[in-house]
Structures are given as structure tokens and as C-alpha cells.
Length: 109
Image 1 (cartoon, rainbow, N blue to C red):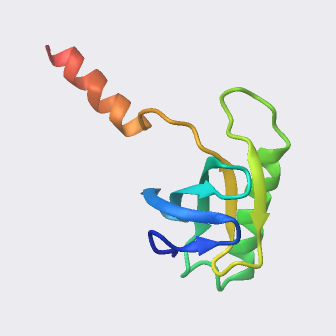
Image 2: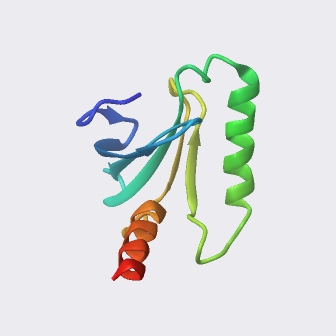
């Protein structure tokens, strides 16, 4: 996984956003286009398995075929990086987990 402050291609890693079973997502600055971007990295433990890499790439290709305001735009697939990553639109706002916690608090009040 990348380190905060590291530069990969045109992306400067700013912070970690979250992680899960398939990998981790980082906030990055696209230094060529001057915009915040989300970079989704395949877990290093899964990146050694061609089947997991193919699944990761299929996910990106399927997402890139969709055009909807509630789906992040895919900017790039970097298969040659180690581990591979998907560069996508960064959307500011609360996470689903934060929204659920907030709604639970409101229900209890």
C-alpha cells in the first residue's frame, strides 16, 4: 500500500479514506489536473493472484461503463502499479457508516 506523502504516477497521496477485504482507498491530488481523486488499491496479498487482479479490473471496467450521478466516474486503471489501482472521482461527504450512526442517534433522541 502507498504511504501518505508518496507520489505514484501523477498522484500525490494525501490520506487514507478506508479499507476492506479487497484493498484500501486513499485520497490523492492529481497533480496534472489539479483535482482530488480517490485511488482504490488492490490488497497486496491479493495482488499476487491473477484471478483477483482480473476481478479488480472487471469491477473498474463495469463501473466505467455506467454513467449515473450516484456512481463515481473512473478516470484510470493502473494495472502496472504494485499493487494495481483504480483512479476515480472523489466525492466529499459522510460515509455510509457515518450516516447510519447519525441516523441511529437521531432515532434515540
